[in-house]
Length: 429
Image (tube, rainbow, N blue to C red; front, side):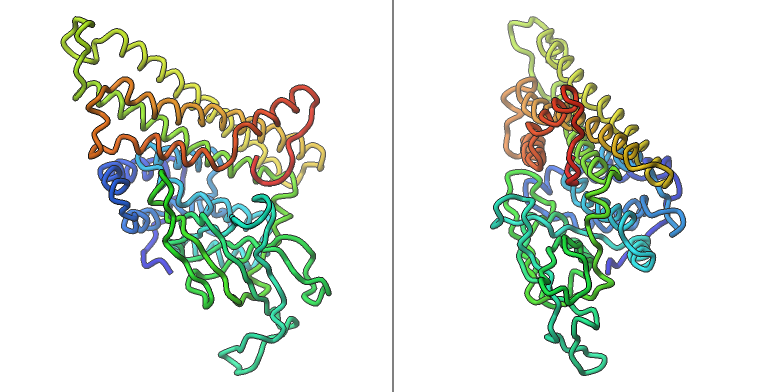
């Protein structure tokens, strides 16, 4: 359990003020942490203590119940300072949303309560050995009496709710800092002994559960301090009350995927803004003008001014589509949470939100990668010094934007425009 005393945030204004304050602190040593791969344990504790990790907890459970766009703004602020720290709680919020949509009352009381107390959730979902990322090899099986219960000295059977998880997950962002792991599993129970419906389940389990091993082996070129290690599960024991069926959130028109993608957009928009700000500051304070410009400072060079203006428009366009997408996701979430919509109307709203977020994802992907690369173009040779670590903006952008290819965003947008085809319900659009 996270050893912090978490504050309680009650409004969007307070959340954004808190995020801006922490972002200013995190920005100071962001380059050093990236350069030395110094994992941000202290910063994550500050984030937990601030109360920001509980801002989506529903009001009935004691949380601020912030709307998606308000949460996304928190991510944008943090990402402009250090996108590693911004990415770490991405899955935390995605799985809190799953808990809200598909968890039982008892599960929501338990896990929302832990998050309000400062607990952090990390994902364990991606696999390398499967044919595609949609194929899940990590299995959830009835335990067949294999687990001895310390409390009664006996063995648990399927009728007792005992299950085991076996498998290996990779790129488990935030796992090194987590109190709880949200593990994506596939039920392997052909005889139906467990009484559970077939399909995928998310298992919530403490990170220190017996049989869980977390390895710090993430070696990406960017997002180097996200704690995205490998997690293995060797006959890990779970009970039925730790399991949440995924279909209720992912296979229904709830805006689940659009919300998750909106947070990714926020990170990319933040990187783009951070790169632009860094470039402008470097030009103002360190760059020398090109001799042919006939000016005294680089900030007066007309060609540099032109290029900075172009980059500023790119960032502003990304921020604008991000804001539109946020409002659209807010609308679908508010409407579907009301419970008053028929399936067809809910589906139309969810499709609109996914298309808006896909549009924002494309513009933010382009902005993050282009602006972070152009930083060197406008800043000059001295900006390439390794000790400055200005390449972290591009490395972070290039790495984070690989999460889901924008070429498929264009596909879904084009199909919607030409044929009125709604995007699929699979949780990543």
